[in-house]
Length: 391
Image: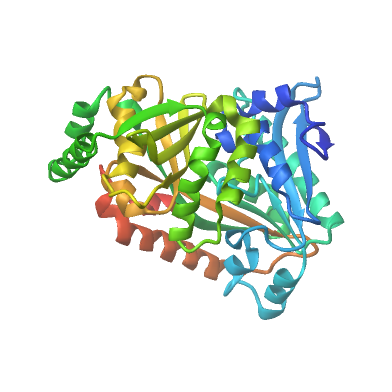
């Protein structure tokens, strides 16, 4: 493999990268890389790495970043390694710079591959990309290289590529996906739900309709100023210091890079914005990125109507396979039909192996997958066996 690196998104061959990202999530596209580049904290560095076959054909790609401190609390490797490595190693991980591969925002990482890549080509590409990512981490004097929130296949590929360095492979979290392509309309959806859950879904749809609120579909750049107060209100409700100006900056930036992929549902009451759900379209998927509401208005099941019921009623499933809903709020999403998908993180010692206790790693993975199943399996339409998630 011929490996080529780029320090900025502007230098990246965008068409080549997006040909790889056609089979990935929206969060691995060049557009979201542009968003991340502008959001990099002071002192951070980026590498966009591409592997090419001997004939020059682009085969796969990987993002890598270095930071002097974690860019977000949920991207803190020392937290994941607590109880798995000795105290001295744990202290070193917490004190030194870190490197993150496969993306550092939106809680979703991925290696992007040419869609027709076979197993041997995938293996060769991942080995080449991860070798370069490790070299980048060494240059930054990082103590750990972390690949966060990966789908199972990518996590296993990356762990195998770093096996010589004692890679630690952990079950980390769960994302949810609403399989909207199963239904042509709400009647199909209601019939798919277990009988005991149908009355609530019908009631939530009826409550919203009876409120007289309307829903318009618009592009993000058209409404940044209108949605910023709604998103700020939601974030502050959940304890975050997130003002209107910051929300306008964040979604103004996303509008510049991703406006042509955006599709935002805006709920209004007498021309006043009441709530919104921002989605991005990529291939046959919608990615529900963020929502916001005016809490001065009564709640009329606005979130579930915007994110679940309105797209189903509009027949979005005829062209869209699923709506990606991200992490969290599991019971609410699962009871309305979302399906859980496990995500994994791979941690690699840069200067020396992390020395994690293999038995402790296996036990944690077992305990955490079983804990998710115990808490949420009963809510999953069709059931759930988390034994399939264990590594």
